[in-house]
Structures are given as structure tokens and as C-alpha cells.
Amino acid sequence: MIEEGTSAFHHERRRNDTPDTGVTTSAAEPYSGMADDYHTLLGDLAEQTWRVGVLPEATRTRPRRSAVVVDLGAGTGIGGRLLATYLPSLTRIGVDRSPAMLALATSAYEHTLLASIDALPLGEESADLMLSGFDTLNYLPIPVLGRCLREVGRCLRPGGWLIADLSSPHLLRRHWRDYSDVQELGDGTALWRHRYEPAKDRCVSVVERRDAAGGICWRETHIQYAVDADQLQELAAAAGMHVERVRDLERDHYSPSAFTHVWTLRKKAR
Figure 1: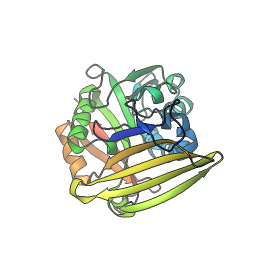
Figure 2: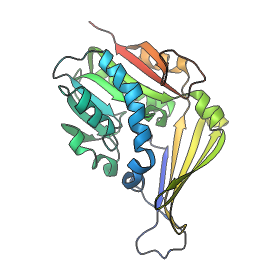
Figure 3: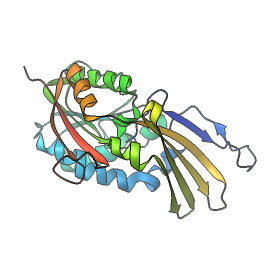
Figure 4: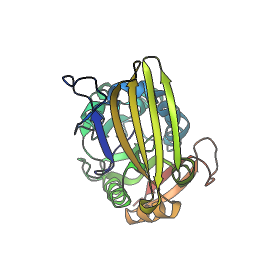
């Protein structure tokens, strides 16, 4: 699920008392618009990404019974529900900074925490496994990503793992350099516009939800930061972890041109 950096999110939604003019007003709460539509817009894609990416890698670690697993950027709980099915003995904790999204996830975890993933309200060496699905870490600017990984390193037990899928630099810098798409829905449309900003090495994506009459229901802007392989390795090392494995989402090898990569980082064992 998506976890936004401090400067990586903007949301607009029409107030109930505003005439239907197409003019929207800003709202501070993240994902207050997309939360209700999330499963319609992205649910199938997010679940498939978990099934072929993070979940198989988590199973490879052979976690002990009653191991503690933390879902970073839990969103609406897609990862938590899959973990409950395929690794049911684990104690699941979901962390997200969006109240609207996390409210939909409570049944998927034993515990949910409303918090940013670069400031985890968890004790030192309290988790065996941390997971981050559906390009969550791309939504953190590089310095914030570094803080997040240091927090992961602090909270993982020695020998613990972080498994995360990330959108590739190729996707953000090239395929989404200037790309738009219309998603047809039963009660309207969603228009996606992606634009890469070379000066900041990031991709700005605007999603606009319209009803069947063409009126704007809400509009959100999300920012993903390109993370090169050597950057991620350096940040992991600074957090006391090393890269144990990386592969393409759909294949068991690594190719820079893939749209999504699945990373397995491990904290040094004592």
C-alpha cells in the first residue's frame, strides 16, 4: 500500500455543501478520497503484486511460529489479509499514516498503528519480519527513506528481514515520463496522469475521480521517487542491513528494465 512522504501528497475533494461546479477544496487528511475507492481502483493490482512479490519472499524466510511481522504502509489491509491466509501463525501489525485507509484495515491485523514509517512506535528488536508492498517506499524522499530503513534496522531482531517491492527507476523516469490513462468504472472514470521531473528525480502522478456525469469527486497527487540499486544498498548498509536478494516482480532474476523489483534485506545476525 502507498505511504506518503511529508511533501509527497496533496488531496482535494468537493465539500458536501459546495455547488457542483467542478471546483474542489483542499483537505488535509491523506487518502480521504481514495480510501473509499481504493479497492475499485487498485485492489486487484495491489493484491496481485503482493501474491507474486512480497508474499513468496516472506515465505522463503521460513518465519518461526508466532513471529512478529510488521506491514509498513498497511493501507486497507490487503497484505494483512493475505498473510492471515498463507502465514496464519504470525502476529501481524499494520502501520500507516492515513486514518481513512487504516480504518478499513483493522480486521486484517492483530494491531494497527497510526504512524509514519520513518518514525515507528515500536521497541528495539521487537519484530522478526517487516514487509512493504505495492511501492510504498518509493513515496519517501531519499533522506526520509534513509530514516525509514534506520528505523527498520532498529526494530528488527538480529537476522530479521525487510522485504519490499519498489517501482523501478526505468518505470518512473522513462515509461511514466509523460503518460496518461483513463480507467473506466461502473459509475464514472479515473484519469491518471504521470509526469517525471528530472530536476528532482521523481514522478508526479495525479489521479482524478469523476462520476458518471463527469463531475469531479476528488483529486489526489502522489509523488514517487526514483531509487537506484546502489542508493538502496548504501542506505541499507547505513541501517545495518545488507541486500540478500533482488528480483523482478514477474521473474526470478533482476533486469533494470522491469517495472517493479522485489528486494530482500537482512539485518546482521549476532
